[in-house]
Image (cartoon, rainbow, N blue to C red; front, side, top):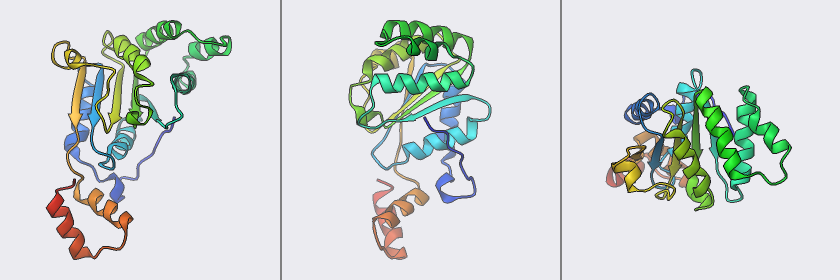
Length: 212
């Protein structure tokens, strides 16, 4: 897991206050999971880093950016290490004495830990591992829906499959947020990375595509 410190004077941290306020409202309100979706490159990771910079001083936030080789086991190990650093060593002790951890026992440990302290889990680039983490994330959802203090935020370019419409519409344990087009600064940064584009042409492209 990684903790990012944001330089608020830099362009990359110029914030869409509406989105940050929506995330703050979720963290301090009801619901177990906030699902943020948007096309690749639209700024989901940047938004996660802003949340860490903005709320990391008053909340215990675990952030994991997923890669293709990640599995439930690697996720659990990183989460256990994070919890251990915050005085919750139960999972570390359990994993140290188990060759093959039982996911149900992991769930019982997490339920106990999350009932004693408040944690925010941010899972970024969920689409990269496909459905490999669905069972574990569903378990986290079920644990957190009975605990309004701890929350999970997932970010993906595709619709996550570990929850369904009932969770969103009926039970209201999942809140969905779609990211619109890139803001002007992010659009400019993306175009600059793509190659040499004249300033006037860049402004025209940004206006025409409205950040998409």
